[in-house]
Length: 380
Ligand code: F3S
Image (cartoon, rainbow, N blue to C red; front, side, top):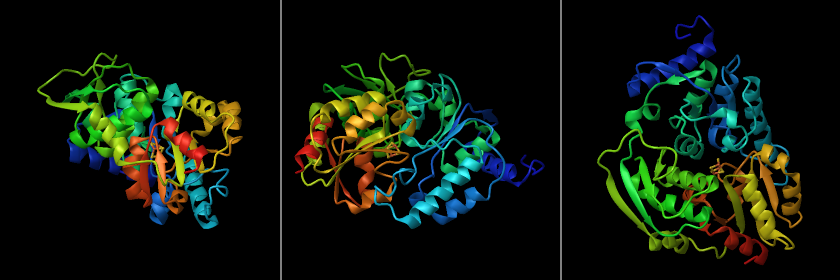
Protein backbone atom coordinates (compact mmCIF):
# COMPACT_ATOMS: atom_id res chain seq x y z
CA UNK A 1 0.00 0.00 0.00
CA UNK A 2 2.76 2.39 1.01
CA UNK A 3 4.46 1.90 -2.32
CA UNK A 4 1.30 2.56 -4.29
CA UNK A 5 0.63 -0.94 -5.59
CA UNK A 6 -2.97 -0.78 -4.28
CA UNK A 7 -3.76 2.60 -5.84
CA UNK A 8 -3.19 6.23 -5.07
CA UNK A 9 -5.80 6.60 -2.30
CA UNK A 10 -4.33 3.83 -0.16
CA UNK A 11 -0.83 5.09 -0.89
CA UNK A 12 -1.79 8.55 0.42
CA UNK A 13 -3.59 7.04 3.42
CA UNK A 14 -0.57 4.90 4.33
CA UNK A 15 1.75 7.87 3.95
CA UNK A 16 -0.31 9.77 6.55
CA UNK A 17 -0.28 6.82 8.98
CA UNK A 18 3.43 6.12 8.53
CA UNK A 19 4.32 9.82 8.90
CA UNK A 20 2.39 9.99 12.19
CA UNK A 21 3.96 6.73 13.34
CA UNK A 22 7.43 8.12 12.58
CA UNK A 23 6.75 11.37 14.43
CA UNK A 24 5.46 9.60 17.54
CA UNK A 25 7.86 6.67 17.49
CA UNK A 26 5.40 3.88 16.68
CA UNK A 27 7.08 0.60 15.73
CA UNK A 28 4.06 -0.87 13.97
CA UNK A 29 0.47 -0.43 12.91
CA UNK A 30 -2.47 -1.92 14.80
CA UNK A 31 -5.84 -3.10 13.53
CA UNK A 32 -8.73 -0.79 14.55
CA UNK A 33 -12.27 -1.92 15.28
CA UNK A 34 -13.93 1.31 14.13
CA UNK A 35 -13.27 4.88 13.06
CA UNK A 36 -15.09 8.09 13.91
CA UNK A 37 -14.27 10.92 11.53
CA UNK A 38 -14.33 14.64 12.42
CA UNK A 39 -13.92 17.26 9.72
CA UNK A 40 -17.48 17.08 8.42
CA UNK A 41 -18.94 20.55 8.87
CA UNK A 42 -18.25 22.60 5.76
CA UNK A 43 -17.79 25.52 8.15
CA UNK A 44 -14.65 23.82 9.49
CA UNK A 45 -13.16 22.11 6.45
CA UNK A 46 -14.06 24.54 3.65
CA UNK A 47 -13.31 24.03 -0.04
CA UNK A 48 -9.85 22.56 0.53
CA UNK A 49 -11.21 19.79 2.77
CA UNK A 50 -14.07 19.01 0.42
CA UNK A 51 -11.66 18.77 -2.50
CA UNK A 52 -9.37 16.38 -0.60
CA UNK A 53 -12.16 14.02 0.49
CA UNK A 54 -13.69 14.07 -3.00
CA UNK A 55 -10.35 13.09 -4.54
CA UNK A 56 -10.22 9.77 -2.63
CA UNK A 57 -11.38 6.50 -4.16
CA UNK A 58 -12.34 3.07 -2.82
CA UNK A 59 -14.09 1.93 0.34
CA UNK A 60 -13.34 2.08 4.05
CA UNK A 61 -11.97 -1.15 5.51
CA UNK A 62 -13.69 -0.98 8.93
CA UNK A 63 -17.00 0.43 10.26
CA UNK A 64 -16.65 4.21 10.10
CA UNK A 65 -19.03 6.96 11.16
CA UNK A 66 -19.12 10.75 10.80
CA UNK A 67 -19.03 13.54 13.35
CA UNK A 68 -21.77 16.24 13.26
CA UNK A 69 -22.15 18.31 10.10
CA UNK A 70 -22.88 22.02 9.84
CA UNK A 71 -26.65 21.57 9.61
CA UNK A 72 -29.57 19.21 10.10
CA UNK A 73 -29.48 17.39 6.78
CA UNK A 74 -33.30 17.42 6.54
CA UNK A 75 -34.31 20.66 8.29
CA UNK A 76 -31.47 22.98 7.37
CA UNK A 77 -33.83 25.64 6.01
CA UNK A 78 -35.56 25.86 9.41
CA UNK A 79 -32.14 26.50 10.96
CA UNK A 80 -31.67 29.51 8.67
CA UNK A 81 -28.79 27.87 6.77
CA UNK A 82 -27.95 29.54 3.44
CA UNK A 83 -28.57 27.50 0.31
CA UNK A 84 -24.96 27.99 -0.80
CA UNK A 85 -23.64 26.43 2.43
CA UNK A 86 -26.15 23.57 2.24
CA UNK A 87 -25.04 22.61 -1.27
CA UNK A 88 -21.41 22.38 -0.13
CA UNK A 89 -22.35 20.50 3.04
CA UNK A 90 -24.27 17.91 1.02
CA UNK A 91 -21.23 17.48 -1.23
CA UNK A 92 -19.05 16.75 1.82
CA UNK A 93 -21.49 14.18 3.18
CA UNK A 94 -21.87 12.60 -0.24
CA UNK A 95 -18.09 12.33 -0.64
CA UNK A 96 -17.87 10.39 2.64
CA UNK A 97 -20.88 8.23 1.75
CA UNK A 98 -19.19 7.28 -1.54
CA UNK A 99 -16.25 5.94 0.50
CA UNK A 100 -18.59 3.71 2.51
CA UNK A 101 -18.64 5.86 5.67
CA UNK A 102 -21.91 5.83 7.65
CA UNK A 103 -23.33 9.34 7.39
CA UNK A 104 -25.05 9.16 10.75
CA UNK A 105 -23.44 12.41 11.88
CA UNK A 106 -22.92 12.21 15.62
CA UNK A 107 -20.34 12.72 18.34
CA UNK A 108 -21.96 9.96 20.44
CA UNK A 109 -21.77 6.90 18.16
CA UNK A 110 -21.46 4.71 21.29
CA UNK A 111 -25.07 5.63 22.19
CA UNK A 112 -26.21 4.12 18.90
CA UNK A 113 -23.99 1.13 18.16
CA UNK A 114 -22.35 -0.80 20.98
CA UNK A 115 -20.56 -2.86 18.33
CA UNK A 116 -18.25 0.05 17.41
CA UNK A 117 -16.13 -0.15 20.55
CA UNK A 118 -15.50 -2.54 23.42
CA UNK A 119 -13.01 -2.76 26.25
CA UNK A 120 -9.45 -3.16 24.97
CA UNK A 121 -10.33 -2.42 21.33
CA UNK A 122 -8.05 -0.15 19.35
CA UNK A 123 -9.96 2.64 17.59
CA UNK A 124 -9.23 5.71 15.51
CA UNK A 125 -11.81 8.23 16.70
CA UNK A 126 -11.46 11.96 16.30
CA UNK A 127 -14.13 13.95 18.09
CA UNK A 128 -12.65 14.87 21.45
CA UNK A 129 -15.63 13.97 23.66
CA UNK A 130 -16.09 10.65 21.86
CA UNK A 131 -12.38 9.95 22.32
CA UNK A 132 -12.59 10.72 26.05
CA UNK A 133 -15.65 8.47 26.40
CA UNK A 134 -14.10 5.61 24.42
CA UNK A 135 -10.88 5.69 26.44
CA UNK A 136 -12.31 6.42 29.87
CA UNK A 137 -15.73 4.80 30.04
CA UNK A 138 -15.66 2.03 27.45
CA UNK A 139 -12.01 1.19 28.11
CA UNK A 140 -11.07 1.18 24.42
CA UNK A 141 -7.86 2.78 23.14
CA UNK A 142 -7.71 5.71 20.78
CA UNK A 143 -5.70 8.81 20.16
CA UNK A 144 -7.48 12.05 19.34
CA UNK A 145 -7.22 11.72 15.58
CA UNK A 146 -7.42 14.59 13.13
CA UNK A 147 -9.98 14.26 10.34
CA UNK A 148 -7.42 13.20 7.68
CA UNK A 149 -5.65 10.67 9.93
CA UNK A 150 -8.99 9.13 10.97
CA UNK A 151 -10.04 8.82 7.34
CA UNK A 152 -6.66 7.30 6.49
CA UNK A 153 -7.16 4.74 9.28
CA UNK A 154 -10.67 3.99 7.97
CA UNK A 155 -9.35 3.28 4.48
CA UNK A 156 -6.44 1.14 5.68
CA UNK A 157 -8.22 -0.43 8.68
CA UNK A 158 -5.22 0.29 10.92
CA UNK A 159 -3.57 3.08 12.84
CA UNK A 160 -0.06 3.68 14.15
CA UNK A 161 0.55 2.18 17.59
CA UNK A 162 1.50 5.10 19.84
CA UNK A 163 0.01 7.45 22.43
CA UNK A 164 -3.11 6.21 24.22
CA UNK A 165 -2.85 2.81 22.52
CA UNK A 166 0.05 2.02 24.89
CA UNK A 167 -0.13 1.35 28.63
CA UNK A 168 2.71 3.71 29.49
CA UNK A 169 0.65 6.68 28.26
CA UNK A 170 -2.45 5.62 30.16
CA UNK A 171 -1.02 6.20 33.64
CA UNK A 172 -2.67 8.97 35.74
CA UNK A 173 -0.69 12.20 36.03
CA UNK A 174 -3.04 14.13 38.36
CA UNK A 175 -5.12 12.98 41.28
CA UNK A 176 -8.20 15.20 41.68
CA UNK A 177 -10.21 15.15 44.87
CA UNK A 178 -13.65 16.67 44.27
CA UNK A 179 -15.13 18.18 47.42
CA UNK A 180 -18.54 18.94 45.96
CA UNK A 181 -21.77 17.04 45.45
CA UNK A 182 -22.34 16.68 41.73
CA UNK A 183 -26.02 16.23 40.99
CA UNK A 184 -26.43 16.38 37.23
CA UNK A 185 -24.67 16.58 33.87
CA UNK A 186 -24.07 20.34 34.08
CA UNK A 187 -22.22 19.87 37.39
CA UNK A 188 -19.95 17.32 35.73
CA UNK A 189 -19.52 19.75 32.83
CA UNK A 190 -18.50 22.46 35.31
CA UNK A 191 -16.06 20.04 36.95
CA UNK A 192 -14.54 19.17 33.57
CA UNK A 193 -14.34 22.85 32.62
CA UNK A 194 -12.47 23.64 35.82
CA UNK A 195 -10.29 20.50 35.96
CA UNK A 196 -9.36 20.62 32.25
CA UNK A 197 -7.74 24.01 32.80
CA UNK A 198 -5.70 22.58 35.67
CA UNK A 199 -4.45 19.38 33.99
CA UNK A 200 -4.06 20.45 30.34
CA UNK A 201 -3.20 17.32 28.41
CA UNK A 202 -2.67 15.13 31.48
CA UNK A 203 -4.51 12.00 32.60
CA UNK A 204 -6.56 12.83 35.71
CA UNK A 205 -7.98 10.34 38.18
CA UNK A 206 -11.01 11.67 40.07
CA UNK A 207 -12.07 10.86 43.57
CA UNK A 208 -15.82 11.63 43.71
CA UNK A 209 -18.31 11.34 46.54
CA UNK A 210 -21.12 10.41 44.16
CA UNK A 211 -21.88 7.77 41.53
CA UNK A 212 -21.82 9.21 37.99
CA UNK A 213 -24.14 7.89 35.24
CA UNK A 214 -22.90 7.34 31.68
CA UNK A 215 -24.42 10.72 30.69
CA UNK A 216 -22.55 12.38 33.56
CA UNK A 217 -19.27 10.82 32.40
CA UNK A 218 -20.03 11.92 28.84
CA UNK A 219 -20.42 15.52 30.07
CA UNK A 220 -17.26 15.33 32.20
CA UNK A 221 -15.06 13.98 29.40
CA UNK A 222 -16.38 16.49 26.86
CA UNK A 223 -15.56 19.44 29.11
CA UNK A 224 -12.14 18.06 30.10
CA UNK A 225 -11.25 17.65 26.44
CA UNK A 226 -12.33 21.17 25.56
CA UNK A 227 -10.99 23.29 28.42
CA UNK A 228 -7.87 21.12 28.56
CA UNK A 229 -6.93 18.51 26.01
CA UNK A 230 -7.69 15.45 28.11
CA UNK A 231 -8.29 12.25 26.12
CA UNK A 232 -8.36 9.82 29.05
CA UNK A 233 -9.47 10.08 32.67
CA UNK A 234 -10.31 7.65 35.45
CA UNK A 235 -12.75 7.64 38.33
CA UNK A 236 -11.65 5.92 41.55
CA UNK A 237 -13.73 2.82 42.18
CA UNK A 238 -14.98 2.52 38.59
CA UNK A 239 -14.49 -0.65 36.54
CA UNK A 240 -11.75 0.85 34.40
CA UNK A 241 -8.45 0.82 36.30
CA UNK A 242 -5.16 2.46 35.33
CA UNK A 243 -2.42 0.02 34.22
CA UNK A 244 -0.43 1.24 37.24
CA UNK A 245 -0.13 4.32 39.51
CA UNK A 246 2.85 6.62 39.63
CA UNK A 247 3.60 9.93 41.32
CA UNK A 248 0.60 12.15 40.66
CA UNK A 249 0.10 15.85 41.18
CA UNK A 250 -2.67 16.44 43.77
CA UNK A 251 -5.46 18.86 42.99
CA UNK A 252 -8.54 19.73 45.05
CA UNK A 253 -11.71 21.01 43.41
CA UNK A 254 -14.15 22.59 45.82
CA UNK A 255 -17.85 23.38 45.76
CA UNK A 256 -16.86 27.01 45.21
CA UNK A 257 -14.82 26.08 42.11
CA UNK A 258 -17.91 24.42 40.61
CA UNK A 259 -20.20 27.31 41.57
CA UNK A 260 -17.72 29.75 40.07
CA UNK A 261 -18.26 28.24 36.59
CA UNK A 262 -22.00 28.96 36.87
CA UNK A 263 -21.54 32.40 38.38
CA UNK A 264 -19.02 33.52 35.77
CA UNK A 265 -21.43 32.75 32.93
CA UNK A 266 -24.93 33.87 33.97
CA UNK A 267 -27.97 32.96 31.85
CA UNK A 268 -29.35 36.49 31.56
CA UNK A 269 -29.57 37.87 28.05
CA UNK A 270 -29.30 34.56 26.20
CA UNK A 271 -31.16 34.58 22.88
CA UNK A 272 -30.55 30.88 22.15
CA UNK A 273 -30.64 27.92 24.51
CA UNK A 274 -28.82 24.90 23.11
CA UNK A 275 -28.79 21.48 24.76
CA UNK A 276 -27.18 18.28 23.55
CA UNK A 277 -23.43 18.78 23.64
CA UNK A 278 -22.44 15.95 23.39
CA UNK A 279 -25.52 14.70 21.55
CA UNK A 280 -28.45 13.83 23.85
CA UNK A 281 -29.12 10.27 24.89
CA UNK A 282 -32.67 8.89 25.07
CA UNK A 283 -32.64 9.46 28.83
CA UNK A 284 -31.72 13.11 28.34
CA UNK A 285 -34.46 13.61 25.72
CA UNK A 286 -36.88 12.06 28.17
CA UNK A 287 -35.81 14.45 30.92
CA UNK A 288 -36.12 17.47 28.62
CA UNK A 289 -39.57 16.37 27.40
CA UNK A 290 -40.70 16.04 31.02
CA UNK A 291 -39.40 19.47 32.02
CA UNK A 292 -40.99 21.16 29.00
CA UNK A 293 -44.38 19.40 29.32
CA UNK A 294 -47.34 21.76 29.06
CA UNK A 295 -45.18 24.86 28.49
CA UNK A 296 -44.47 27.07 25.50
CA UNK A 297 -40.94 28.05 24.47
CA UNK A 298 -40.41 31.80 24.02
CA UNK A 299 -36.67 31.88 23.32
CA UNK A 300 -35.18 29.62 20.61
CA UNK A 301 -34.39 26.22 22.11
CA UNK A 302 -32.36 23.62 20.21
CA UNK A 303 -31.95 20.05 21.37
CA UNK A 304 -29.15 18.31 19.46
CA UNK A 305 -29.07 14.55 19.11
CA UNK A 306 -28.17 11.77 16.70
CA UNK A 307 -30.73 11.02 14.00
CA UNK A 308 -30.79 7.37 15.11
CA UNK A 309 -31.77 8.41 18.65
CA UNK A 310 -34.51 10.76 17.39
CA UNK A 311 -35.84 8.00 15.14
CA UNK A 312 -35.92 5.53 18.02
CA UNK A 313 -38.01 7.93 20.12
CA UNK A 314 -40.41 9.86 17.85
CA UNK A 315 -42.75 10.16 20.85
CA UNK A 316 -40.18 12.24 22.73
CA UNK A 317 -39.39 14.36 19.68
CA UNK A 318 -43.11 15.10 19.25
CA UNK A 319 -43.53 16.05 22.91
CA UNK A 320 -40.51 18.35 22.82
CA UNK A 321 -41.42 20.00 19.52
CA UNK A 322 -45.04 20.54 20.62
CA UNK A 323 -43.64 23.19 22.97
CA UNK A 324 -41.95 25.11 20.15
CA UNK A 325 -38.44 23.71 20.79
CA UNK A 326 -36.54 22.10 17.89
CA UNK A 327 -34.87 18.69 17.97
CA UNK A 328 -31.98 18.99 15.55
CA UNK A 329 -30.09 15.99 14.19
CA UNK A 330 -26.76 15.56 12.36
CA UNK A 331 -25.37 18.82 13.76
CA UNK A 332 -24.69 20.87 16.88
CA UNK A 333 -24.51 24.41 18.21
CA UNK A 334 -20.71 24.55 17.85
CA UNK A 335 -20.16 23.24 14.31
CA UNK A 336 -23.18 24.90 12.68
CA UNK A 337 -22.86 28.40 11.22
CA UNK A 338 -26.53 28.95 12.24
CA UNK A 339 -25.36 29.70 15.80
CA UNK A 340 -23.43 32.74 14.64
CA UNK A 341 -26.54 34.89 14.26
CA UNK A 342 -27.17 34.71 18.02
CA UNK A 343 -25.54 36.99 20.56
CA UNK A 344 -25.50 34.88 23.72
CA UNK A 345 -26.03 31.13 23.90
CA UNK A 346 -27.08 29.39 27.11
CA UNK A 347 -25.78 25.81 27.44
CA UNK A 348 -25.55 23.11 30.09
CA UNK A 349 -22.33 21.77 28.57
CA UNK A 350 -18.80 22.57 29.73
CA UNK A 351 -17.54 21.79 26.24
CA UNK A 352 -19.93 24.18 24.46
CA UNK A 353 -19.11 26.77 27.12
CA UNK A 354 -15.42 26.48 26.24
CA UNK A 355 -15.84 26.47 22.46
CA UNK A 356 -18.72 28.80 21.57
CA UNK A 357 -16.93 32.14 21.99
CA UNK A 358 -13.91 31.11 19.88
CA UNK A 359 -15.64 29.02 17.22
CA UNK A 360 -18.95 30.86 16.82
CA UNK A 361 -18.14 34.39 18.01
CA UNK A 362 -21.03 34.30 20.53
CA UNK A 363 -21.02 34.80 24.25
CA UNK A 364 -21.59 31.62 26.23
CA UNK A 365 -23.78 31.32 29.32
CA UNK A 366 -23.94 28.27 31.57
CA UNK A 367 -26.77 26.79 33.58
CA UNK A 368 -28.17 23.46 34.67
CA UNK A 369 -30.98 21.84 32.72
CA UNK A 370 -33.74 23.41 34.85
CA UNK A 371 -32.21 26.85 34.40
CA UNK A 372 -31.99 26.31 30.61
CA UNK A 373 -35.64 25.24 30.35
CA UNK A 374 -36.78 28.04 32.66
CA UNK A 375 -34.98 30.54 30.51
CA UNK A 376 -36.45 29.06 27.29
CA UNK A 377 -40.04 29.23 28.52
CA UNK A 378 -39.62 32.46 30.48
CA UNK A 379 -38.03 34.19 27.54
CA UNK A 380 -35.81 36.52 29.52
FE1 F3S B 1 -20.66 17.00 19.95
FE2 F3S B 1 -20.77 19.38 18.90
FE3 F3S B 1 -20.49 19.14 21.47
S1 F3S B 1 -19.67 17.68 18.08
S2 F3S B 1 -19.39 17.24 21.76
S3 F3S B 1 -22.27 18.47 20.28
S4 F3S B 1 -19.39 20.54 20.19
